[in-house]
Amino acid sequence: MLQNDFAHYGELVSAWFAEDSTCLTWSDLPDFDAVARAFGADPGLGEAMNVEDAQIEQHGADIPGVLPVLVVGVVGRWTLVVEPNGAEGTRPEVLRALSAEGRAVSVLLNGPDIDLLSYAATGAPAIICDLGAEPSKKLAALPVADAASIMAAAGDDDRLARQAAALVLVERITGERLTEEWLLDTGHVRLLVTSPLPDDIIPEQYRDHPILRDPEISAVVRDLSPVTIPRIRYLLVRLVVQGSNLDHPSVEEALAILSGDGDDAVDRRIQARRRVWALRDDLRNSPHPQDAPRLHAAEVVLHGLESDLAESSRKVAEHAYMGYLADAQKAAVVILGNCLHRILD
Image 1 (tube, helix red, strand yellow):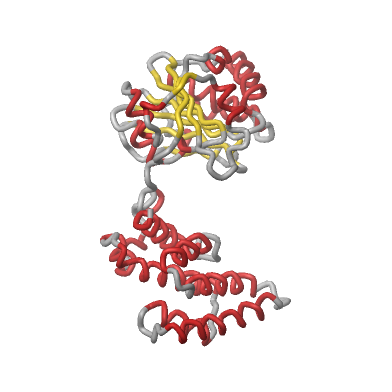
Image 2 (image 1 turned 180 degrees about the vertical axis):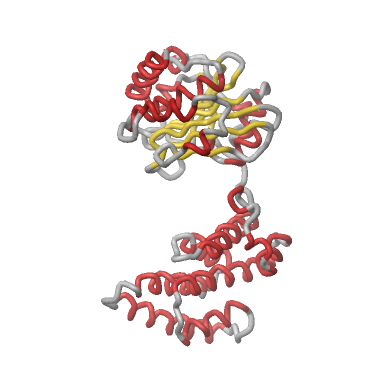
């Protein structure tokens, strides 16, 4: 029986999902409108379309201005959402909304260097399995008695077999088989993701992190108002500087200005920016590998010294994620970045 299941889903993966990224999400939430809204779509703006046509439509979805697409249909008592070139269904925020009164399971195939299987029930934290890593512990938490053995049967070196195994697991959970006939059905509803659910301020992996007891971080989390933007920007810059060990007088002066402890007159900020600029150029020409993180930190400091507060803060948050950070620093950067985006967006 398992061999037949592998053969079925192996053919389906090869024919439909082998090239582009696709996310498939099943929910037993009976309210179609609620499912659409959980993905950030307006249920009143749908049109009939099958998955094949949606894949063609999304072939160039990385072009600016092209909104993510959902194809929504029914499989037994489950609602299935297919996202060609999308991944909303992998987000804990979406999975929690879909499973608030039941269950949801999603599979991301050919994501950026990753395949994921995620499961959530009654609003509990999602179980997210990276199928390319060692998934045995998390697989054991799925409501499938032989989940680990099914994945083991796929082997370690055959990605298509691993993806087929993930769909076998989904069938074990939902009791429904995904078929090519379903993917070609023109009675499904095509929707656009226009208003995605906002990211959690504190992602699930950081809900019990010690960084939440830091008074500076907790103060920002408690007060998500525009007046905290300068403080968030300063903390982000400081975290990157600390992570890279960028110890230099011009950087100390910049941090003093950004913290509000120094003179923030326009001419002083310009002079500080020039000095950090010179430091950045020196680091660019450095032959020492250890100066690479310092160069990145100098770039972040320069972004922090720009005059437009909102744009400067966005740049700092974007580049801080790519910094050289210890675990606590990374957690703080993620949380502060989420706070900033919640305020600005």
